Image 1 (cartoon, rainbow, N blue to C red):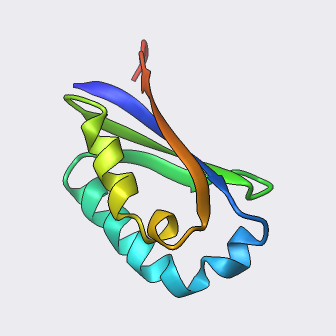
Image 2 (image 1 turned 60 degrees about the vertical axis):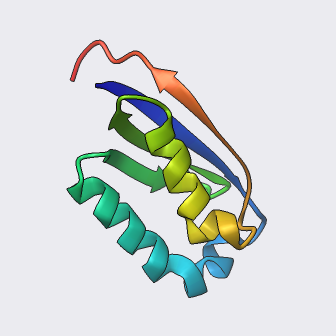
Length: 90
């Protein structure tokens, strides 16, 4: 299994604007975590973006999450991308 980081850039006022979608986003994240796909996730400080670390056979595991994330679907994420991460210590 490989690691992939999903990077988010977010809109101004993201913390306030995410509230209507937060429960759905967290449910999606918990399901991915329980499935062994999502390893770590969180917003930056200040909250102008976020990073989510996934484990899977390909970047599709992270890309699929982003496509279903209500933050992405509702325009709170202005840009997202995935990078393979070569982990040397776990």
